[in-house]
Length: 450
Image 1: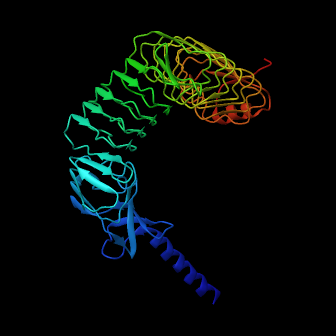
Image 2 (image 1 turned 30 degrees about the vertical axis):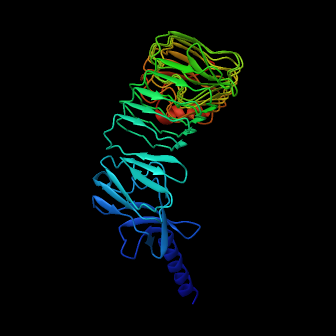
Image 3 (image 1 turned 90 degrees about the vertical axis):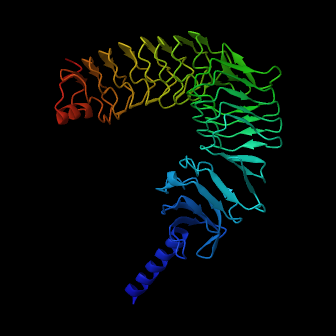
């Protein structure tokens, strides 16, 4: 009896899962969906191959109210889509839902739809007074956002072929990744009244050379202007939060350096006092930059902040730095001098490919993970006594590394020496984890006392 009851309960559980996330069973069996807490359905994918797709207004008796951002990933034929029909029940489409529908030309939406309208290749949210999507198939080179629009939603203009765009005074927010990969965009007119610009908003805008931040803007997220060819960033007079210092866009309220124009021909930058954080990807691919002076009091350097600054000659981290995010320094092949902050306890995913021949690691460091890979000039390293973990591929492919000293307290070594010279000598303490590691991996070692 207990066994029968168990199988009944198991069957009920399986049916519950099928209803909460799975394939429809009422004629719309090609749609994947998930059941929301309010007993409505969000479509997450489609298994059919039609070019003209009609979204249902209900699945398994549940009203369809939304399309998930995962729709494109879960729809193998998404690139085939040309026309999509949206029923009145669908009032929410998550950003990026149609990112891969690059040949989509039209939405069919009723005139009485409660929240959406479509016109001239642009999908609007009439309730939020926002632009949801500028179709990638839209061939317009110039676009004036209509008066009254308050927001450009996340990913709205991604991969658009626009050359120029003008925003009205009603505009308040530019969303995250909103103009990402707009590779033809050369002119953006940001009107007074704009308040915020989201992360990665103008990422990969290769032809955008200059941008002016209105006085009304009080919030710009990190990486808003990364991986582009900006030569100059300007801030309108009277802005209470943002300023330009030595070419860099700085949030003076929060002490964050947001961006440096990657195609600026300036060879040096002195980060102003008061900056406590370098934002993520702030100096990304700044090929002209040779010298960076960081202020005392700097606390954090964000992810990818100095990636591929390949002519940077030295990195001197003030001892105030306590956080170095992943890949803050990577691919800096011309760096010949490195001073690591004594405020750091961990070095994780950093300094790969830099050109130093000498390395001094502070005594404060307790963990090194996936850092210092492929240092072509490094020959000798002494790991300080407080280091307990040397994990991932730390020091992997350091071809000229001939000697490295490991402390007795190290407990984890990982794949640290992959690709190093076969004659590398590892200096260890007797009966240590490091000695056993060398034995197990048939690596050359000597005792430190020898």
